[in-house]
Image 1 (cartoon, helix red, strand yellow):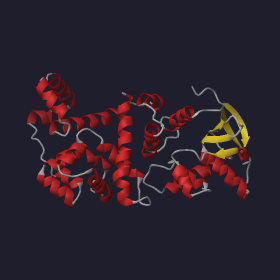
Image 2 (tube, one colour):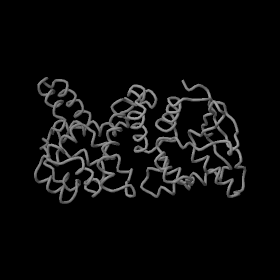
Image 3 (cartoon, one colour):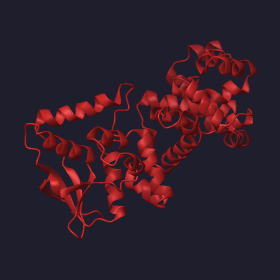
Image 4 (cartoon, one colour):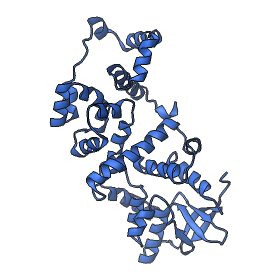
Length: 335
């Protein structure tokens, strides 16, 4: 249990930036005195948009200046020896310190803080997960996966505890961690640290969907090949990853994909003939017919679909499920 924090106004000189944060420890080995913007970038707080990440930092900075301070208090851990460590809100604290050093007009000597007493690592992890995985200041997907990976592989938290902390389902947590591992193992060595683009992460999440990795391996390729396709733009937009099993199964579309890209290959996929009756049916009729067909699917046929997630039938059903979620506005993690 984390317990209740006490809202206080603290002198910024009394609070230490959190250099033990596992997500920025390696970064701080390079920059012993990081700027507020470097903290912001290292913490994965930047926008997930296609635009310049620096613009997101400037938006935060200008918002604090315009409002004369922060609206949401930082979170601080008061240790037994009295030391105050900022466990959430390091960028905002760094900005206050920067404004004070630069003599920026305003009151930057003190900062609102929610103070907890002598929290252990598990309690600190719980707060970070609640704030950044399900809270209002969400990390980008790659940063979430990086932290989940740390909790699972370094702190050895069981999946049940991680899921309890951050909500969702075990399946999504496992997919996120596996996607992080695949991206680090195959994409980072390919492009290097300077060109590592975390916005490509969703492609590696798609790679974890049923049947996709199996189809890549069965076609004689590897996850390293997949990383190269991502980097070369052959799988843009990244949702085209889900079509790989069908693309790689057909010789003509496989050749077109390798020569051009997935979108061209998708356009050339063999499509099943649709009868006049199906073509003229409305969505309610089609949904009812499909429900009836699935309900009455013989057990051997259902077993074949389950055991071969890269089959055409399984992939078509997975695509349908994804589209239905979009149509209904349903988040599958909330089901």
